[in-house]
Amino acid sequence: MLDYTISSGNIFQDLGFANAEEKLAKVKLASVIADILEQQQITPQQAAQLLELEIEKVNNLNNGILKDFTIDNLLTYLIKLGQNIEIMVTNQQSEKSQPKINVVYEKIA
Image (cartoon, rainbow, N blue to C red; front, side, top):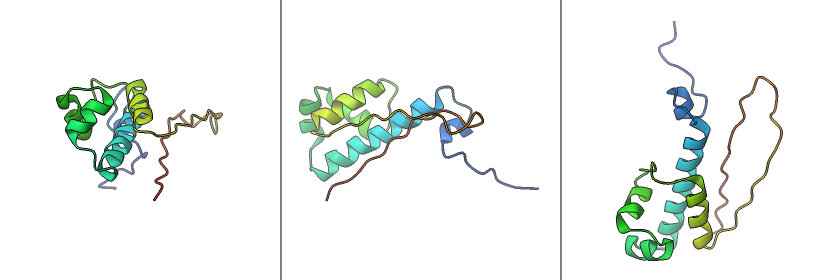
């Protein structure tokens, strides 16, 4: 008998959360934002001004506390940080597969 479960690749789905794909996409987008802030050496105070957020919300964003953020918010912040966003819609692979949201981030050195 197995002592472990193989992950689906989405922890929210594995734990039975509703809207698991959206939750994972938000985490990935927030992670990209945090990476950009770090790479560009933007302080939380500067980020608050740039993103038009209270410092507490910037801290929540950096700490993965995302209940007050929508995907739309996160995409808007990426634009404010000078990022291009591409949205690609594709057909589901098969009837057995679940539709998913995939976030891909290309770091430019």
